[in-house]
Image 1: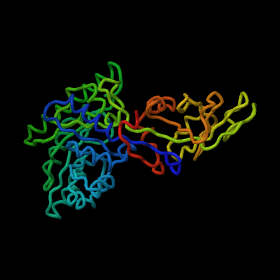
Image 2: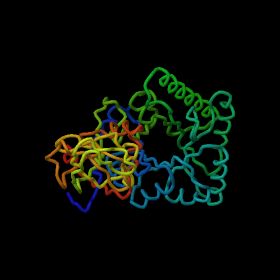
Image 3: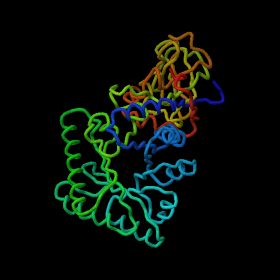
Image 4: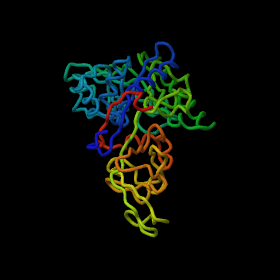
Length: 378
């Protein structure tokens, strides 16, 4: 361990590859694979993850915004990249020159993009986003919006200098259990298929239809269509153990200070924890500025080689305290795993009242990412 790294995240690209191949193994023949690498690949490092995905045969990548796409192109990533969010029309030239695919979520944006592309004498590749029940981005098509939604999609696809390569939607509850979640997902899928059929009856042909996010890849194989979009699955979560996925991030720190505190003394800001006995207290250099959620204060443990160490007092910006009274073999510089092999990010996320996505994405930029072989995380 390099102690200059006060706290660090070990990333296994081998586990990324393992998860990719496990997901690939359940897909229909000729189904394309889009790896979601937005938000710095859920905190794992978008450039490094994208390079590995490109090298092992991924067909597409997805990011949230133009800046994320530019980072990948500047790093030499050459496979198609879909921008899921909005890009202002002023950047159409850059979209085209960098060979990026832009999501179109309404007719007005299609018209704006078309005007810019026509002025350049170039063609912009787009994917149409259909809102089938997420109520976020996309052409409204549910209920009384169906006919007008289809009309607007057809109009968008017919705008000059736009190449409508793909069409997609996003499932809202495909990762939720229960009959109602299944019913809602199936209704979304049926509506998506109806929209495609109606648009195609007007003479529009999409080369790529996609709707299977992580929850659908794991639980709704019929939704695979031409391409799937796994996000959290790629990073080792969300399959309920069915696919044998492996977590790819291990958040690590070490004990920087140990002190003995008498019984009855408050610990950290606000005195939210008071020592019930003479306590051997360890200080570890990780806090909410590193992405350790403050909501975990007094509500979790971190893993040592000798077992779990309860976290005590409010988590500070740069450090927090752990109780080492019952762990006499844990000393200065002993390694501490926040989450990873011995404690799942899902466990810690549940204790924080959130989901593993947020925990992974919260690991801040000041935490170095250290890329390791899979064997190093076993």
